[in-house]
Image (cartoon, rainbow, N blue to C red; front, side):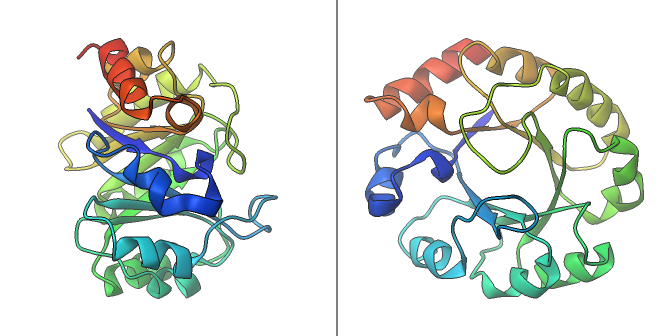
Length: 214
């Protein structure tokens, strides 16, 4: 299991300091990029993410909750171990988004809203190396975990079969919900308020790992 703290729950006025506060301990960093259209919220854009890309060594998970991921994916200074994640519900054709992400040398990730059928992923599983299961409605942090995400993760694991694809989960993850998603097959755990909402961030991450079973 790898922990990817979600910087959506960090203090934006001191974002680098917040990121450093979970090191060592964080395996990756998760960035929720929102455009105010695909979801009703605005957050980071390429200038902020790229600035921190130059200052942090850990891999980034760049989650594009935007209408036009093919247009904006090339604006991120991604590394080969970074993942740029797009939604199957976006307006751009999937093949164009995949090509745009590969053009910057990043890994291709895909996500979908909780109500979107996993069947929509069947045609693109051979093109991606990371699937993000949302256990809340995308757009805002601090929401309650949707328990129906657990059987979705199990179903996704069966769909993936022998493919080399990471399963990540994001939304409402805390010490009470983390074990179920890990046992279902999630390998990358994204947590926001469960980490940045605590005064001892490293201690919060240790508690999450212990709750997950080690």
